Amino acid sequence: MNDTLQLKIKNLPDSPGCYLMKERGQIIYVGKAVNLKNRVRSYFQNTYHTPKVSAMVRRVDDFDIVLARTNLEALLLECNLIKLHRPFYNILLKDDKGYPYIRVDVQNPYPRATLARRAEKDKARYFGPYIGASAVRDVLELIRKTFQLRTCRQELPRKTPGRPCVNYEIGACLAPCAGKCTQEEYRLQVMRALSFLNGDYQAVRDELTAEMKAASQKLEFERAAQLRDRIADIDGLRERQQVNSTEALDRDVIALDRDDLDAMVAVLLFRAGKMVGSETYTLEGAGADAPEEVLSAFLLQYYDGRKPAREVLCENLPEDADVLNEYLRERRQAACALAAPQRGEKRALILLAKKNAADALFKRNQQAEIRRQRTVGACEALGRALGMRTVPRRIEGYDISNTQGVLSVASMVVFIDGEPAKKEYRHYRIKTVEGANDFASMNEVLGRRFRRAMSDDPQEKWPMPDLVLIDGGPEQLRFARTAMLATGADVPMFGLAKRMEEIFLPDREEPILLDRKSPALHLIQRVRDESHRFAITFHTGLRGKASVHSQLEDIPGIGPARRRAMLTHFGSLKALREATQEELAEVPGMTAPAAGAVYAWLHPPISQDQSV
Image (cartoon, rainbow, N blue to C red; front, side, top):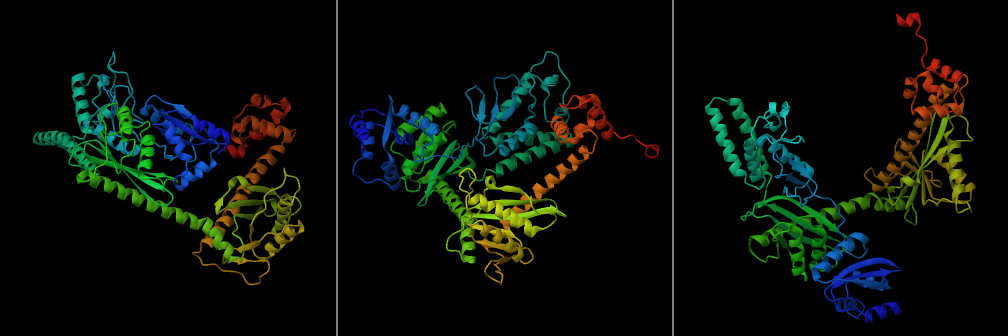
């Protein structure tokens, strides 16, 4: 330890608060403590630490502390500091998505149900959270059809009733804006909707069933059919609540699963005793940490800006469970119970959440392995297939594009560790080759590229590739390799022929044929296709510009400068055609005769034959 650390450790106070571990001035870890002296000193004593903590302590050369009055204040401070600094060694909840709510402004004389991204303290009623906006919109649509609440944003009541909209005509709104219902009638429907959102589906269903039977007895079959459809919608919504609890409570059930590297947390959301959805979160680098520590960090960040349920059930209770429980009550602004059940129905829910976490972790690892096989694994397989001693991390692909030798261009695309690195892509205009000569064009491009790689000027020097792909057979490969060797560079290079996807190497007569399912072949196909796409896109753009530019420059008195000025001023040839002669004359650098010539060219006179 340096002198600064020793002095600060010696003078640590007996107080709750937060500590900020630093390396070269950068905060790498934020923690909280009931007693800062005991907690911070423990990091620098010769005791056992987890591998992550050991690695962190080795990097610490300084730390700061922030004192707090209570444990809860220290907890809130820790949450804010982690959000602010995002330290490398903290467990970070990277999924920052918010889950929507349904909001009913009961203070309004004629409330409406709307989607809200977060629950605010505005005296409105909030229901949720729901898993995704689409789920909220499904419920809102059901409410609109069933309870006929308004969806418009008008300020009601109005002084003068207006004309009802189409929603009234189709039976989806009571039209309070037009005076088609009283405030008491509308409020009754609002109360039914609130009961429905609270989970009392059966009462609403029974009311609709009674109305449907009454309408049928009165021979109002169209009305009865509408009510039947609404009952079917409610039943469909109920069927989506696949897991029920015998207790009709709002409850969040949280459990985790770990491997040697990461942790996966699953949250099951129960509202009114019914499971309304599940969420999973990856906590990278937390696989070796104690489950209690992981859950404590997760709860702190998960409920920051999110309202907890009446009960929060966890697989394990952290050491600071009392402080966390106080934190949850503060977030809920009401009673909230944090518990770790060991038996019974609640324990079964914990095991269900743990099963979800294990499944999500398994799928994530499988996806990561597939991604690796397509990228880094494909690079390794390609290196073995080509007989390379090292893995080609930076692969460059080249292609030539022209139209019968006109506007010949080339593309260079770069893949790093099997992924496109689009900031490294480059275009080339062929300068020294006349006509459609792909061999000579490839020779020019590779010479220019490797002269940049061999440059002594740091501003011009480009990184050297590990492997180069040439789109073509042995001849294209020979011209490209000759150009590269002439610059003094010597990088592994191969050609890919399109007909049989044959790989040609410079020192081998027979081509290599890879298995059609080989990740290495899929990688070089992606490089080849990307280089072809990039070249074609560049060439097509140049050809379009050349066509427009050449036509404008055919007009007497219009040269490159005036052509650029007109296109810059108007933005497109279409806008140029729609301009008047006076507007053309206002372009910088234009004169009245030049504007007249352009206008005449854009609006040729219609001949008598054409008019007929």
